Length: 218
Ligand code: AP5
Image (cartoon, rainbow, N blue to C red; front, side):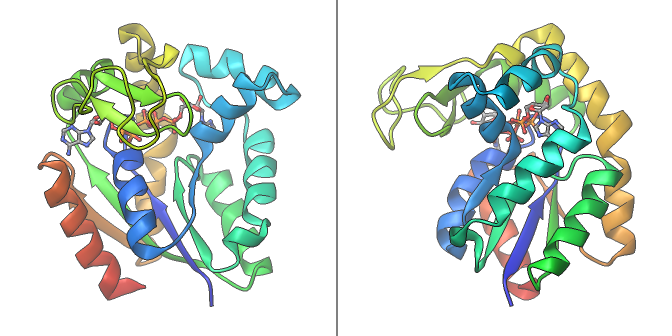
C-alpha cells in the first residue's frame, strides 16, 4: 500500500522546511502545491497565469484548478509508493477530493502532522525567508541562514524573497488560513489522523518529533 502524509500548518509554520528533510528520510516525493504553482508562473503556463492574481493577493487558488493539478501530479510514476503533501489540501472540498483520488490509487491518507505555531511568530519567519530559485529550498536569514548569503546550500542557485512574503500579503494569507484551512484540523482529528507537533521549537527538534510520530503511524 502506498503511504500518503499530509503536512498541515499555517503559512510559515515550517511545512516546506520539514518536508525537504522528511521526504528524504521517508523516501517519498515532496509535493508542494505552492511550488507547483510558482513553477507554472515561472514558465508562464496557462495554469500559472490563472493562479498568479490569487497568489499575489494571498488568496487561495480556486479548488477546481488546484485539485486537477494535484491529481495530475499524484498520478505520475514517482508517486507509486506514496507522497508527502505540503500545502494541499487547504479546504474541505480539497480534502474530500484527495480522499476520493487516493482511493482510486488504492491508498488513503495515513497521517496528518499539524505543525502548530502561534500567529506572532509567523510574520518574522515569512518576512525573513529566502527561497532557492531552482528547487524551492528554504532558508531564513536569522533562524536557518545559508552558508553563503544569497546562495542555496543544496544546489548553488540564487536565493530570492517570495512576492507573497510582503507584510500586507502575509497578513492576508494568515487570515485566509484561519478562515478556510482551520476546518481541516477538525476533519482530520475526527478521522483519527491528526498528530500535533510543536513548531515553535528549533528546526531539528521539530524534525525529530515529526519522525517519531510518523514512524508510529506509517
Ligand atoms: P504555499 O507555498 O503553500 O505557502 P504557505 O502554505 O503559505 O506556506 P509557506 O511556504 O509560506 O510556509 P511553510 O509552512 O512551508 O514554512 P517554511 O518551511 O517556508 O502557498 C502559497 C500560495 O499558493 C497560497 O497563498 C495560495 O495562493 C496558493 N496555494 C498553494 N496551495 C494551495 C491550495 N492547496 N489551494 C489553493 N491555493 C493554494 O518556513 C518559513 C520560514 O521559517 C523559513 O524561512 C524557514 O527557514 C523558517 N523556519 C522554519 N521552521 C523554523 C523553526 N522551527 N524555527 C525557526 N525558523 C523556522
